[in-house]
Image 1 (cartoon, rainbow, N blue to C red):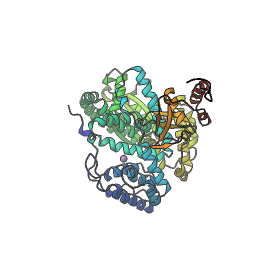
Image 2 (image 1 turned 135 degrees about the vertical axis):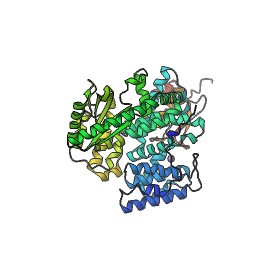
Image 3 (image 1 turned 45 degrees about the vertical axis):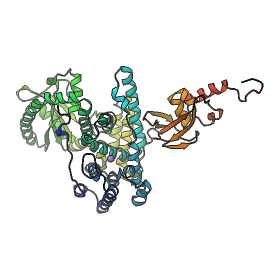
Length: 518
Ligand code: MN
């Protein structure tokens, strides 16, 4: 059985700057010059380095930047994408980048570098029972939050996602014992974040790339199961497209109509809900109608229903009731020609761009006034669990809509009262702002708290009263039979640590009684 299916390789060998330069025409001349400068700098820094997949290292930087350019983000984001591995993987320092490219680009590079330290540890690859799954879900949700909290600038998240996408495309070249961990991380952290940011296309790609590395046999048998059916369905969809094109143009509606095969991983997830019965999956290939205006979208829906009878209960109006991540479309499932059941999605070009690119779509759309009111209305319809994300998304959207310049200073104070820190092995703890290594030690285990004698933060020794920051990696040094000190109470923040320190020091007298024999 082939482990790696060639259809997953999108990788372009021997890309050079020309590859990127054709994608940055949407930017002004000075912006393009900045990007060329960043390219030259990165090429020099990575000179002589090669990727495990073969080819010079700079290709990875170019592919990451090309993705950012395809999303039409600003020039600083493209430049930072080119430079994203310079600090981590070359002798060049962040300070040098700051001097050469300024504060913003340096901050973006720094952010991307830091996000690289958020990891799922290998132990989670072997979880089995309910309890472990629960614990894993909790950890992973914290990791996702840590990711967002550390990123501060949304462009950092998008660059990191682009970086991960290219790494997934070349994952086959990574030593086998590392692949599963990276794929799992992609599935559990990166893909859900892409989804929450409304980047549906990226989410689908990330999942499909990770799929065979984790569920090898399942992916293989699903591909086999789907192959013939998919082809037949695509042919059928082309037929429907012909009929629809005619009807819509008769009604004076200009539309782009396409068939779209469902992503493999999401198909697999859906099949599990339908007990593996593929005949129940109506959107294996969905027909997508993209039109100019919302009025035309509803009109097109009418035309579809006039042509083919809809299945009851399958009409979904995500235009007036968008999904929590901002997704908008009309969905309907109809009995089309020869009674075959087909899902049809109708949306405007703008909605289409957003469905594919989500938050990133806002860089090249300047929305008219009223857009943010609209978002407010949609928030009312979202379940509470997802509300925080929507609120945040809406806030970003509003900021980006109202004032493009603010992008530069866009920070997420989403988790402003909490910080996320981790052990060297990647176990994440969230603590209140102002917490110290002592708080951290007690959050791991009371015995570790009690036995603490020192701490290293990001590899450097610090005072026990040192204030921890988002993303810090903390190593606690312990000594057997060591006892908590009363003065720890002067700088511990969490009630957990404080109560345990108090309980312990109250048992120990303040001064040794000189009259008792020890
Ligand atoms: Mn990279």
